[in-house]
Image 1 (spheres, rainbow over the protein chains, first blue to last red):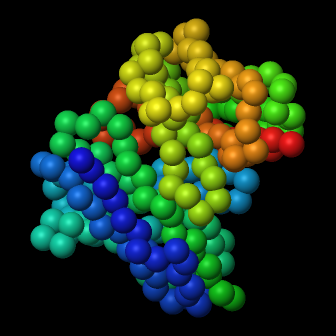
Image 2 (tube, helix red, strand yellow):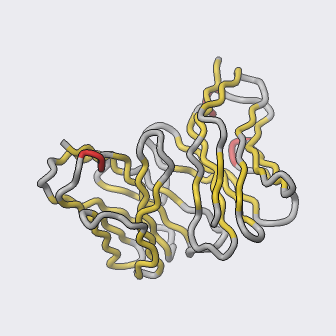
Length: 113
Length: 114
């Protein structure tokens, strides 16, 4: 089986401060890991993915994520948050011969001006 | 531009009505998906089609009936729905199933059952 956990329903951060949105996963074998963002009244948009190689992955809008195999984590980060980053963020995992991606429950990011 | 277009964006229907949701992708992808997104619940995968063949059906009630006439179009036919079926229905596509290529989502159909 594969699963992904986003332990925080909501994260609040002041504009200009660094942000982290947490994600941990469970999968057999090597994982493919993804982050998506959902703005109000929109579908999910792909931000970045980890396949193999460098543990630090850079994506759209200045976001990056760090793959940590020992901690089975894939936290999303950004050095300086913008108000426009306020949205719902989903972590997702695919691995172990599965044919479908499993999404987390989502974390609402609120950037406070 | 998303590359995946869903119509209608909003739909209000009674429990006895029959309606259909439409999804079209312009990305040349071979896999298409229907998801249900309800407030405070995980994203629920409903159906997966690969090369127009249904490869996944996650115990979805028969009042939801998918149709994939070709690799660019996906429909979700609705009949005799229940109030708990009110949700955002998202369509997505990807190059294929099981790979690391990301899914591309439409903006969804907001469905309200009276």
